Structures are given as structure tokens and as C-alpha cells.
Amino acid sequence: MELNVFLIKYFRLLVLGICLLLLAGAFFFLIRPKYAELNQLSAETAKLQADYGEQQAYFSKLKELEGAYNQIDPRDIEKIAAILPSSDDQEDLLPQVESMAARSGLLLTSLSVTKKDEDKTAGPGSSGPAAASNLPAGVKSLKISMELAGIDYVGLKNMLAALENNLRLINVDRIVFSPEENKATI
Image (cartoon, rainbow, N blue to C red; front, top):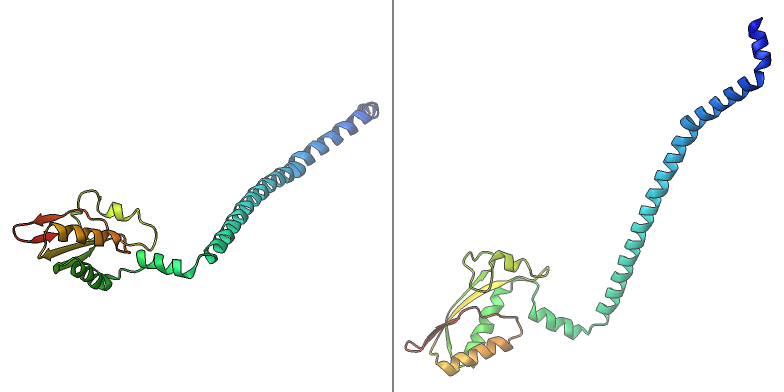
């Protein structure tokens, strides 16, 4: 009987308490996990949209570069390919160097070509393999050592001028000039 009186007296409060407990339970077990999942998905969506924007900017930059490349005269591309050939082309070096020596009035007695990374004792001004790693993709560095005979000071100057004016990029690290023997090693 006391239970009935208690229930009748506090019925509204009990119903309100049970409703509040049901709402709190629904919030913590149903709504809150879905809300957290929604926040996580919106953060991932924002990140993906930012990545998409970066990819779009990159793609438009590539299109712009492609347009600029297509505007380059093919003869200019051939000149650049001659200056920086994409392969080693070591066999093309001998005729070029021989021709430069002949035009300078000299005799090429020896020519050795090695890849820069194979050379463990690189000359001054270079740091061996590390120097070659600074080159762009597709560009290789070679070390060329040549001995010239029948040389004098004027011939040496002419040969250096010919090397400087050659289409290929050539850096002279060291010159050993022996005027009494009419020899030079470059």
C-alpha cells in the first residue's frame, strides 16, 4: 500500500526521471557516437578536398608547362639535346675531341673517359659521387683525361678555347703543361 501511495504521489517525478534517463542513455549510446563519426568524416572530407585542390593546382601547372614546352622550337630542343645528351655517348666524344685538337694544330695521343661516380679520386673542385648527384635526372657526368702532343702555349690556348666553345658542357679541372716535351694533359 505504501508503494501505491508513493507511486501516486511521485508519479510525475518518476516518469520525468525515467524519461531523462532514457534520453541520457540514448544520447551517450546512440547520438554521441554518430556525432563523433560525423565529425571525423567531415574532417576527412576537408582533408581530401584540400588534397584534391593541391592535385588540381599541380595538374594545371603541368598543363601550363606542357603548353610552354609545346611552344619551344624543335630546333632549340635539338640544340639542348646536343649540349646535354641523354645518354653517355662516349663514342661521340673521341671524334669531337680529335677534331678540336686537329683544329688547334695538336695531336691527340691519349683519351680516357670514365663515369664520374666510378672515379674515386676526383679532382679539386668536385666531391666525387656527391657532385654528380646534384645533376638533374638524365644528365650524366663524365671525367675525360686527354694527352696532347706537339703543343705550345698558343696551341694550348686554342685547345682551351675550342673546349670552351664546344656545344657540350666541359669543365677543365686540371692542366699539366710541359713546354720542354711539347706535351699537355688536360
